[in-house]
Length: 460
Ligand code: URP
Ligand code: ZN
Ligand code: ZN
Image 1 (tube, protein in one colour):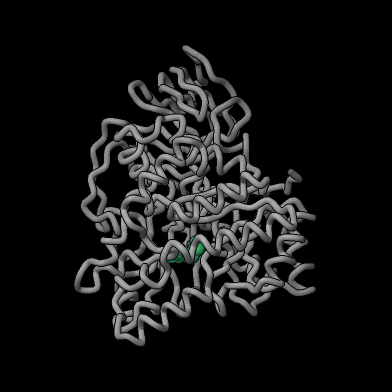
Image 2 (image 1 turned 135 degrees about the horizontal axis):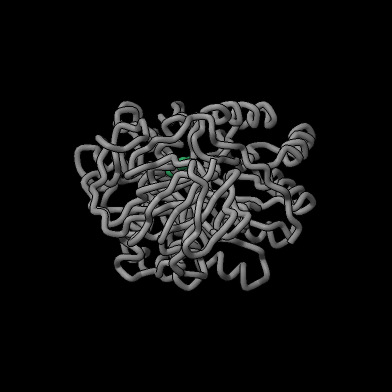
């Protein structure tokens, strides 16, 4: 299986040049001008197009039993959505419920993906309790190629852990060289505010952000990073949404805490007024942490440009609108949380970030691919274009004009939060280890071709 991509403008986190790319046996083997290929090689003409390393989404949910229901995608639809949007590697949150066995959970999540995923994948192992048995199982899971954990400070009773468990998890992570990713919101504050709002008859989706204001997230970030400081563990804040939380993370970083920060495409493009839409439409925009006041967007874009925030993910959590209505019509606390966006991330980041001049092309590649690869032990196999790297490539047409719609997306979820939004640019061709999975913007990939990516722990 050989592939030649000719005359494209290659853009990585640090370089930009016109060249041909030759790929064989799943990897990039040659980069140069006027390259030849054997007669049976597939040749793709990329003149006038940008060629990016495959994008990496470091925060995705596919199999997600949560709040009494299930998210809608499986790996067949989820990986098709990822690839159509230019994402060639995803890292899913493996989230066994509190009380469930960690190893059984890991096996279950692996089973959902293997044989079905068209793109490469890995997991952050959710630590939803911590005792002697869990500790032993986490050690085994790390040996099986998982080098990051996930903890929730929120969602007590479902995924959330207590402070003793948090401390023990961070100590184990430090010992093993594992990164601890964390959902940071103070659950006590959330619970108290939810009770107050519901008791005063404020039950609509527009109350969700009132129950989880920026101070709730900032308290979570500060708490988590103080624990990290004591243990010396490497950390990663998932879905940071606002300036108050960012201030806490930067302060911890200045004290020497090893912290990488992720924000989401939703926080960069949507604000809380979307969750205030009438007739329950706001429920499409319920996620945690919630959408914020619009002024936070400038803070987040600037922080990405300045390298203070390292990654942009999706936290794809595809709960149907229908289910949201059935479950949360009379009580916003029952609306399943999350805004799906796995397929839209790259187009939105390009349209609303690069095209508007908020970030340059190198930053675009860095925050959507390279930094995730570096943080989670996939670099330089993934996240860049160089000989020896996996031939995960995105031939991007910057002239394409599109429109987002539920009618054309690959995900099984019954709505798009970005319905009717115009986009500039799209992945025309996407390859997974040298094989075309998207052609002319259409998914042509192969379910089951995606591989589990073995990741080694690292001591910082
Ligand atoms: O609202 C969200 N973010 N839903 C998905 C679960 C999580 O917290 O990551
Ligand atoms: Zn979360
Ligand atoms: Zn999540």
